[in-house]
Amino acid sequence: MYGVLAAVILPLAPPSGDLRSAGSTVGAAMAILAIGLGISLMRFGWAGFNTLLCAHYTCALLLTLLQLVTRGDGGPYYELYLMLMVTVAATHPVRRAMGYAAVVSAMALTPPLLSHPSGSLIADLGFRLGLWTLCSVLLLVLMAQLRRQRLAIRLDGDLAYELARTDVLTGLGNRRQLVEDLESLGSTVGAEPRMLALFDLDGFKAYNDTFGHPAGDSLLTRLGENLSHGVGESARAYRMGGDEFCVLGPDDGAGGDLVARAAASLCERGDGFAIRASHGSVRLPAETADPAEALRLADRRMYAQKSLGRASAGRQTTDVLLKVLAERSPELGAHMHGVTDLCEAVARELELSDEELTPLLQAASLHDVGKAAIPDAILNKPAPLDDHEWDFMRRHTVIGERILSAAPSLTQAARLVRASHESYDGTGYPDGLAGDSIPLGARIIAVCDAFDAMRSDRPYRSAMSVEVALEELGNCAGRQFDPVVVAAFSAAMLGHDAVPA
Image (cartoon, rainbow, N blue to C red; front, side, top):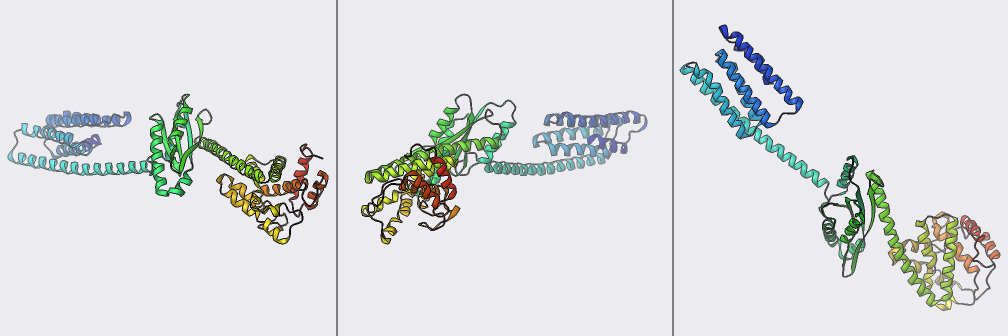
């Protein structure tokens, strides 16, 4: 830019006499040099502060030489000096800009002073020098203010960027930060193997309900600090939201140790509570290099482990209740074991998933748990029950639901127990459900329960044969029982060697 302006302005102050040719040559060289230097700075990336300042000093020196050669004292020279000073003031710190202004002022005054200046010329030079200094100072102040504003905007932007990727409660990175870190790993060629592990707190909901949400927030803050310290500087901890945390660290053969240390950091015990963490982990990029797939895989493994823990708790609760029923009524205990075996056979015939099978078998084992509240005089009555006794008996499914609902691990089973005596045509109890509105597990229990009851001796009748019991189920299909379940039950019985003929 300076070279172009020099090429335009200098002809306004042409050299005189025999110096015209020399002055034109120096001016042209100066313009060409300035333009070439500018192009080089932009093309090859040399535009550092030191390089630019040297270039400005070079331009000022060339301009002074040109003025000496041509013996010029015209205004165009001074306009170019002013442009140099203003440019430096706009692009350099105050210390460098003021030093440059002093040097350039001395250069600009040298040619006129060497040519025996008059008083008017000295006064004009003094005025120009003052004007240059004022313009430079004003520009320096303006640029300093602009730099402060730009720095403040950048700091605000950096702060907003950091806050958007930081969990406010714990100070750990959040899900957005984790996704960016995973994407950065995926875009890095030859990145080291990493371990991604997700953690979900077991028992946190009960802690929140017992001690309140402020105490829950304090617990999350403590656990977040423990996790950050526990994984060390080589790994990074995140809070995904709620009671879920995450760790991303090196997988150098000690990945299991990283997961174990993180899980231990997320445990806390006290009076009336115990917090642990279920986890799921995935190796990157050995198992997957896609961030979304890695998160899905780790999440699936985490909840598989959590479900396993819940199933274990449900199994223990079921065993305790079965033991209580067996102690009270051995016949009732044997009946529920038999129904459970039959339900498992039917579930396999219908190809139920493991997620459906677990609550079904829990409910089958405990479908008569509510009968623990029924008097023995009604349970063991040798004659048919009257209406009042039947009303009392029908309450056992609701009682059973209340008993099982006290254990969180048996919540799904409690729903099946309540509906285990509903009829397919809507004439059952306690809610009068019909058809597919009855849970499938409850429909299976109803068929298996009826078959086992028909195959057992009762005070008022003898046990039926397998053929008669199956025929009775077929007769009631579509009314009391689901026809599809009855058909699956009959198919399962064809190969069921445990049922005596």
